[in-house]
Image (tube, rainbow, N blue to C red):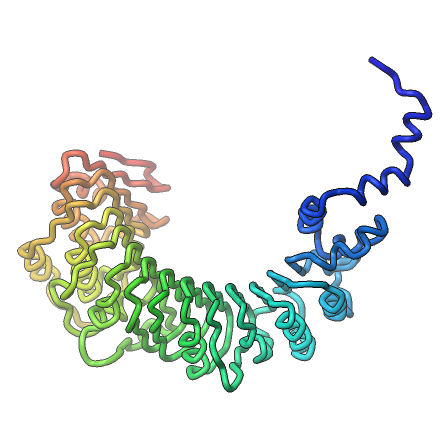
Length: 437
């Protein structure tokens, strides 16, 4: 091994030489280093050398979070929002992405937000993420909706108010709104102004009337409280996830005259994945349910539903959907039971259903979660097993508390006739282990 002389080591460790090496790094390497640092540390690199003094001022992405803002004692600084303004006012060039995530800090001063947005608009901002504490909404400055180059906008814990006039966000492709407040009028003005929107996520909200008239929309996630919903012009939507929250299980869900199932889902001709949870199947099953849709869901491959098996109207809606989906291959159901005051004969219902053709020729995988062992669930499982000639696996997850009669029930359903010779029924239970046949 060749030993280096003391002079060589001294030369290698010379601070001046080290500064030269740092200063001569290619700009793309410098940018990668800075983007990997918290913004607080990125700004501090200005002391490394003369050339590094202003490198942070050209960063295309500015990200603030609670971790980057807290002091050594774990508390947020009093002037953190002044610091954000300081970073923005000294920034040179364009900013592609600006992110502020303070989900636990106290309410943000709207005047601070207004200053940030003013500077961001001037810098051609493309992506904005603002996440604030839930339950204490922060008013977003209306000038935010004048940033015409926005392609992605995420707002959490915010109150939205559009400017007047509002010319739309013509470049916006993704919009995420969580724990937000907005008037019906502004909500629909916002959506109508997003002509190329492809992904829309709405979480933790209340809007009485939801209307999605966005031809470009491909992915929609809705999880909140609403009274009405429609997809008038969503013919290109490929994935839909809806979870309807109601504050009272006894609420009477209704919409307009006619069948909600057909009116709401009937235009989704390009849908590939459909997830309908909580009370939404009950909402869709209002009024008379036909045997099939007037159209076929020729692209639908995956269906995931929450179903009250004691409500035969809901079960009718499920069967109507299955009969109208000729190529679906995966079915997942989360079961729950709620007794109804007035119900029709289950025996007559299933006798009628078995007389209606419902070949599920492409169905290969079925999963039923939260299985109670009720007769209505057993009838549904028996129906699916007997109508699925290509079925490969049917998995059942019973509820945690297994009733005394349930093991016998599970053994019984293992004997149900199967249209597929390859079908394997698997029961996964914490109490009795795994049963397969």
